Length: 366
Image (tube, rainbow, N blue to C red; front, side, top):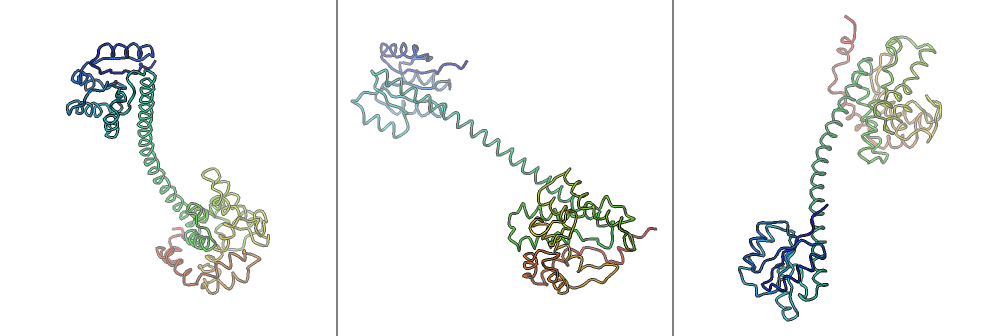
């Protein structure tokens, strides 16, 4: 059980001190007495457990004021209550204004004395609560900074792992090496052009673009790298990679935009795509954006069965397929961006790659 509040009564009049002591003890307060300021100083400056000090008004000299200020410094939550009659209002007001005393009460009115004490005790509780709150707040801020640092470290490690994973996947097929990195950048630029401005959403779209072909991990090399045309059965296995990829990522970190791009990036605007044959706005917008970016990279990249084409040629082909393969709104946003911008993105995402001839030689078995 908490100890009762401790009150120090400072009054040179023994009878009046005794009356206050009897009254306060009936109200379950612990009390101590002092007849002079010097006696009070010994108590107040050596014991910080006092909740309040009751001082019957006497002329305050510089020494008594110094004692009160020192007591406040030693025990900041100490309440100084002056018991003063109506004959000394000016002095009481001056002491209140200077903060030397906290409450003034009529000395012979026990109800007002009790009320003043309870006000100080309430203030003391609020001050302690505020102190505890600030302590918890500072601790929370410190923990939050540490959690944020760890989250940023984890996010950086996650992004690096993701890019390394897709680079490794691209290396399975030397003809499309660097595809994931390029198409992720195209997708991000298109998403911004179409009004996506939330940093987290854009980051998820980029990750979805990087991971779009992750399901090909489960496709055998004999099918993925086959030189000749695929059989119907082999083609059906290839068409499983969006669902396979979605299943893989669902077990790790499934964010809506990431999952939508992985699962629906081969859907077509006219409903003839796979795996679900969705059409128009049934296809999530980020997947519609990615589909155009994916085609742009395919058209402008080298393939064994055809030469790469320029961005002007890619634009004509994409415009020709507006409303069938691609969302017309996405096509319009793509066409609003100058071909030089796409050329620059292409250069920046592929300039670190070795020449195609070196990559082909490196991929051949010894």
